[in-house]
Image (cartoon, rainbow, N blue to C red; front, side):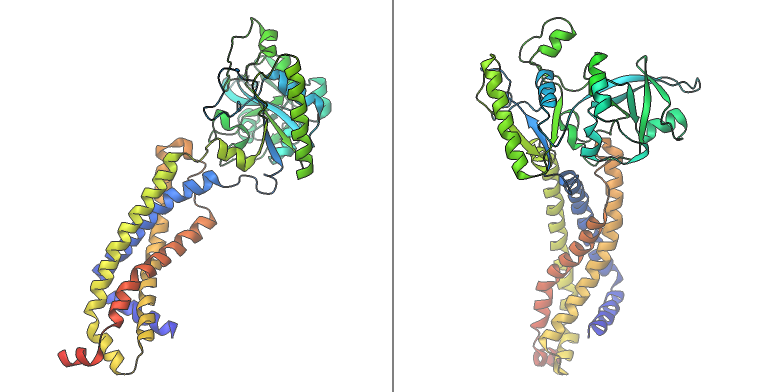
Length: 435
């Protein structure tokens, strides 16, 4: 029966091409507006590393001014000081751990045809690569031995390697960064993150870094962070005074492979803060936090209020389109009252008539869904063109494609319920008597 109803629906839609086009276009525009905003909302807020997000934890310590909390809600700083980062690293209480910060340095290529260029890199411990799992095209990251030896090694991004070495295997070769030579230990493959969750403080939608060097090496060379740097009191003059200050300018991440390990690490943090209190630091009440990836993204409001409002407006527009579609379907089905009366007189039940018109509504929704999918793609392209910050989250994935089609069919069927119900109320005898 479904194929029969489908044939009837297609035949009916072809008889009124203008009305059909208006209904399909209305559904398509509403779907495009809602799905464009929903896709951005979905990709910004979805788990970026679902297989281990609960094991990766961001460390927060409250070393801030006793007279003024860091956050208006009493939250601790979103970064830590050098003193605390190195103390946590030296304690080695986590299964894996890294301190990281962002910096911008010039790269001086050996090839005279390639001009020196300024680019953004990251300072990290060797565990960074096994914790956040970027794919390597050549070589690998460095290990604890290189961290301890303050080795001058570097991991390049794929784009940087192509610029410097034409995309060839550059492991073992030398790269000059800010006047210092580094040996290439590895080259990353394409590593495009929707949200750069490991450093939300300095730009959640920023590109991943062009190079990575050891934390200990960066400190040896007195490389100051090019990211956010917050101090509640002035540090003394010079590099050593800056390292000893309470300024917060780096992030600490730990990997803890079980809830028991998380509880142990939380206890360690509490003990560490208590010890520092005895030394005259951490004047505020103890306020340590260990937030996993998704908790950290929620805490930092990666999905802004503006994006949520835009998604709400998109669905409001879809609702307006559905109201218009209801009116058009009502007009269409009302004009078919004679056909309905005849079918009922020949023995068709209300249920069969209802099913026929719902299938016709579904065809409208399916057509609107496919056109809406194309318009959604155009909408996301426009978002990427107008707002370059959203280039990593303005893409359709398969889940959003399926959602678009399903939403279009559901919306059209829901829009057709009332007109279909009205059509089924036709009294056969009364209708035939008027013909």
